[in-house]
Length: 314
Image (cartoon, rainbow, N blue to C red; front, side, top):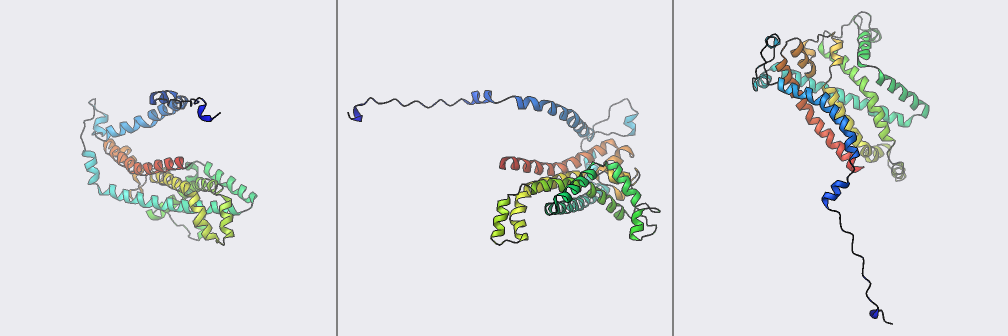
């Protein structure tokens, strides 16, 4: 019998696609419910103070308003226009940018160098290095700053003894004092950068490195051709985080100068603090804080974009 005489077999119809509304209903809600507590705490801890500072930056808030029953008056953009004409503020901005660049550059250089070293040493040496880095990371900023302050003390500081400087005062010259502060910041940042970079190095495909070496590639070619591109997303994220942290450096300088840093020691964070709690210019200090947040927002947007790109790549 010819196959043409056979009754045609009805093909099954394709299953209807779920509508968009049905797809939305089928999305799991548990992740959104789990994130709600963290979102609520973040809004309460970060959102409210930020909004309050923004409101204060448009008000006249000084000693007179503290002892007055009347509410502080709104002055529009007066505090921000004062910033534009404040030469001390722009000097502080330049100092903060230079310090941030030096701190981040040194931290990344030393941290990545130690991570590459950890990859090449024996396992027990690597274990000792990891333990030492974590111990250094666990030391609170206040303690580490006090230790560096003792080491650089004018009369009995061990650093003066080792370098043969006699009774040298590191803090009469702000450049030397800020160099000590930079050393403290770098000392505290290197453990995180080293451990994170080493973790990224362990994820570099070994077969690619082996194939490149079989093709005659040298160590430098392997590093710049395979290793560096593989760990680049991690390095970009760590660099962005370091910029955010170092741009807001406060404790190290404030503690080194015994709670009264002179103007040539002030960064943006310290300048805003001194305007608020020594000058009692709360409105102006809030405007400085808002400008600082806006500057950091540029780096934060870049950081978030890199995080999204990394997530999409994975």
